[in-house]
Image 1 (cartoon, each protein chain N blue to C red):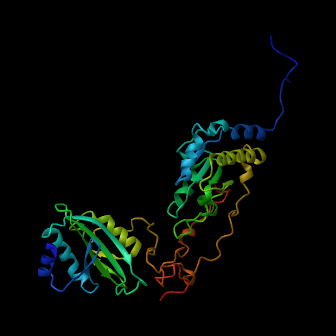
Image 2 (spheres, rainbow over the protein chains, first blue to last red; image 1 turned 90 degrees about the horizontal axis):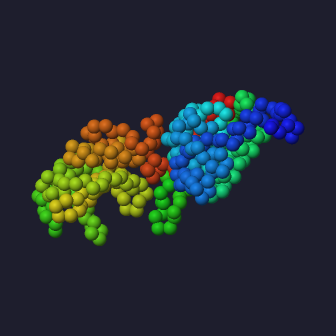
Image 3 (cartoon, each protein chain N blue to C red; image 1 turned 45 degrees about the horizontal axis):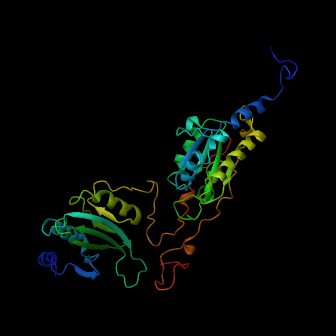
Length: 199
Length: 168
């Protein structure tokens, strides 16, 4: 006997809301792990923290199957074209988590080869602070992404269509000049840094 | 005096000097002598003195170093696999266009090590079969382990296009 009268015969919703509901509970992360944050990312995926509780356990190493890139670790300049290519290969709609201090700002690696934040090169939705962040923080970031999908998501990804301007931090107006170069100690006995021009 | 020094003194009189720090024994070839002498000296060490293994090859920039006379130094760490004896050969080079002979014909393992020294210090090894950058991207123009290269570079790290949300 069918139960009638308890539920309506049909529900009215928006197609966008339905798509968001389905998408946010099955985010497929692309683990772009280049450093120690990747270890925390693995811990998040394993049994103690269990990101499967939030529907994001299906990590794939092919960008074609993912819609959430988690950049975990420092990105050097040689890696930037690779990262951009992987980002472009992921199908829309897609989101990006910048995990840890290095991916978000370069961290302690303020050197010639380490980029000072991946948001200078690809769009980033959620930043996770920490060095490395705890798995709970990463889970919080996934929940924030889910919240963002609920608020802004559309079935055809039209919320991304008009965002054609650079959204990253203010570009470094000027790299440090030669006169500010931190180089080998000139006074070998006392100084550790030299801020006067050499030669 | 170790036996290899007798051989070297007989073969290359006055072409090198020696120094010692704890148990590190060094043979030092100055920048003027190195292009002509270095390869023969290493070959003599390998074939006549038994130092048959090139354990390491590295570079040093002595810019602003106290009492340094030459700028670049390439250190060859040799090991005698029969006796376990070790010797370090230090060869110097100077700006502009620091050059040293490649030891690739003696030890094939020097291939990537010389490429790394070339990549990071800009010391060119004449006779190397494939002297390309090994760590840095090929479009990189500087040699970052030189002491006059700024820590944060000349802006190479941000010389990339940006992908916006709409075009991704």
